[in-house]
Length: 239
Image (tube, rainbow, N blue to C red; front, side, top):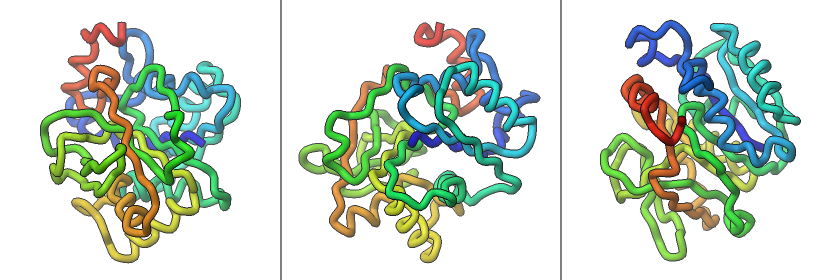
């Protein structure tokens, strides 16, 4: 299952003068939403897609129309009536009706990963993060071990140059539920929000295998801030 959480408020864009949510903005004739979701175009006919949306700006209707236009065969839309406590909480709430050990791929609505493919080795691990090498401290980070093993993850604490691009895999949805509840019970948050990357630490401590997939930064296209959006309009990768 591929999960696209999009319950954020687009507050930085509205403060910058935009009048519609970030995912509706056009990038050379195509919405941010469609470009982000087309990262998984290879799986439009095989995987179930679940979209987690707000109940404002006619988001459910927008997503329904966009998904049909993209040609996704199997999908569901979960509508949120209230804010959540971060992306991990959004995913947890949005999958409450699923009580099976389904694999999860979670991705941002404001990042593009053209021509994404699942790793051939994905069945050999209990979870993985996709990362790229970059500077700064505003990312989720991975401490690497041998054979692409993840020893530790952090949120906005720089422990390496391996930065998460927002793509997270969990082999078992029930594992995700369990470690999120553990984080919630212990109030293991970063800046008051529950992020996904730190959840892997519980699995690592329990002896489960977490890997990272290193991709070139050129293969990751960001559109999370007004400045990134403005720069993207002249980016040859989205022409």
